[in-house]
Image (cartoon, rainbow, N blue to C red):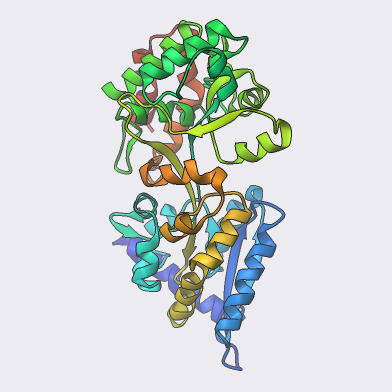
Length: 407
């Protein structure tokens, strides 16, 4: 009850502030101005949003959108200050949204957009954009992991097909290690993104990090995955310093032909084109224990603040317009990400992204709406690498779980 009263008061104050400032409310000439704060992904982001806004304004006379861009380094501080000052934008482009849901500051998807727009989101991403079964976030861009394979090295090692199971991956990694000058598999368990690398293996065993309601790290499935990672390392099929290896330099080495296989993101395709366009490689599904498809998904979100109920229709119209395939696909592909909509995936002509797009329906996510996730992520980044230095995986996972439980 206390939270509801506080949030309602904040929403009311926000609407009053905006009305007083006339920065985001109906002007005297009858126009409606929406305010938008967006994170910048590249030098293209501002221009892409301006193109969307120009098209929307042409199609919706009387509605304007005031755009403000911020870097990822600054945007969290900016939006935190705006919310505390009752000056939240009508639309926000950022990653996390759950805190604003807790304070009852956001519209739900059903309050704003058409059923067609909601149904067009990939199911896994729509679920990830929901709290207690209600969608509040609008997935904006997606990223997923896949296995990058140096085809020339596997051929040299006598491996005819990329692996689909853990056993096949072990055999392929051993063949590459034994018969070439490269390591079989790049295993980055350093602090840069150890939670992602380990999470992929956890998912491959049917495990993961739990749910928004409960973080679970020390499960039997995760232990099986950790032991398999340790076996790859202890048997010499990865680089010797896997526990301290960071993702970015490891993938740079993959691009230069130093690894037979490594898990990577869509931008690696562009990096290969830039740094080693002659690399003979392919992108395939991530091997799992039993061959079931899975990937680790990442999504940023749009969200709409409940500042002024009289602008609900215009905010919804903007979101419906943006997610039309011809508008949305240009935005997301120019930025080098994956579309989160089914229509976008169907209409995409970027063949290099197809392996990632095929995995999107199988994406699973960090339980980032759980307040303890930040502790879990930090503990994973600092401790999971110990399995490559001789520490018992069961002990490592138990230590991480203890930190989570005490958070």
